[in-house]
Length: 134
Image: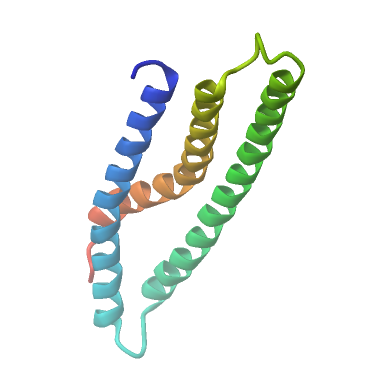
């Protein structure tokens, strides 16, 4: 397997791995900060906790919007392929080619949805690694 779909799959695997490596330190830092803050967090802690909520909402909004747009685009391409198959079955995409197009469409939607969450998590991991708890 080579070509665009293979590159996309490798890119998705890299993004997933980076996300899996970035999330635990971020969660550990924030949980430790919450535990140290106790019942009355400082202004700095309240800012961080508010940022945590806002950035999650924004990343997931971006993710859903990108996935919706990519799904819409993929549906149009798949419909066009099926229409070609219906009207010209001897020259249009065959079953395996259509199945590959479905797989590529799903990977494209996943990639578009993963990108904003990946960006936010990796940026947080870098930022919080430089930020002292106290």
